[in-house]
Length: 171
Image 1 (tube, rainbow, N blue to C red):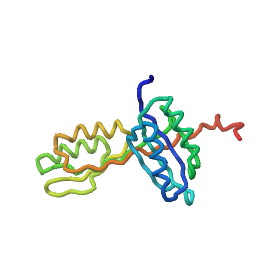
Image 2: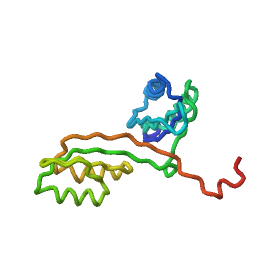
Image 3: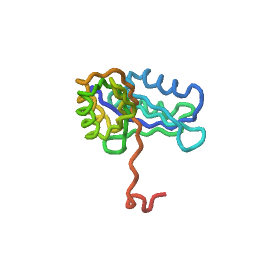
Image 4: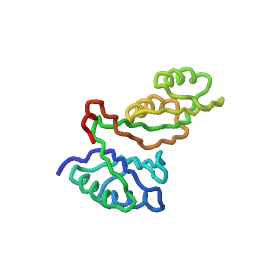
């Protein structure tokens, strides 16, 4: 049996009642742990994109992709292998920061290009976007200040654009 690993899937669906529940149910029914799930509308009217980061083995992934393609209201399913897509997450943190600790926290925010979006005398709310490694590195550095609250999105991902050479002769 192969070792479980992370897979990023992009599923274009009709924006209708129950579609998300059917997609999520299909993955859980096949033994996948859905690590992150993000859903939002796309530029085409009536469609949404589900980006799911799931954990499982290759054989289960192949079966899940086939089953997902069979679901009603699913328009397109893509699996993004390593290096195939650009992926980002958003992290909002309320961090304890008084006048003594705020300068050091601001320096960390500058290094990670984090945005300070709210400040009080006792804490700040910071927004960080990036890949999962950047988010984790930032989080690890600010833990000692004291995390008061946290909200984090799952990954959103899009396939990288094709180079002009690959487009020649494509139809």
